[in-house]
Image (cartoon, rainbow, N blue to C red):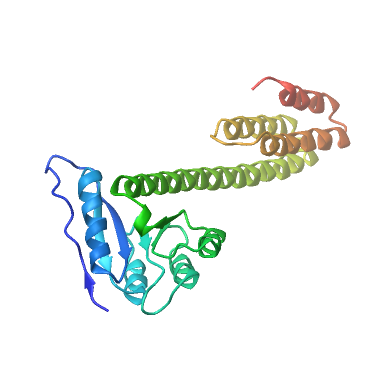
Length: 244
């Protein structure tokens, strides 16, 4: 299958913002020109269109990276219907895919929606402005999802680090108690509280996660009591209950 790059709308040199790549997988050249015109007229120079006229070439282009959104026709020479969407979704699970098709059957729309298509657009029913609205909405939703995913990942990694640090301090504190180094064990307790407070300042940190960290401080206080360091245990629990 041939691969053709459609020319994007001319963008002023002063515009430094990267154009977002829209990959059109469509075997009808007339449909490609309609999409190109829509991007030029309503896209404000924000999009770069790349066109391939078959699924095989589309998958090959996706493998190279740099695609921000896929416009996918379901009626392709190699595959038709929801299978086309499934193949693209498997190749690019984190890229928004808009179906742009002439298939008006409700069962087709339901099938691709069940597999996660961001939108189902019928060629004869969508205008250039509506196409751009769908593209903008899909890109925005995808970016928000990635931001939330990254925030959760960063918070999780932060908690793993904080938990490991607190566990290490707990074990060190217990060893110090066995050696009757009470002042050093108390310092371990203060560091555990400091780590818990720092973790709680991280965006998205959960109350449950912070409670887990403070529980380690309580375990150190219990260890102090078990070794008859009751005054130290009281001081550690005072650290535990002090406002952050």
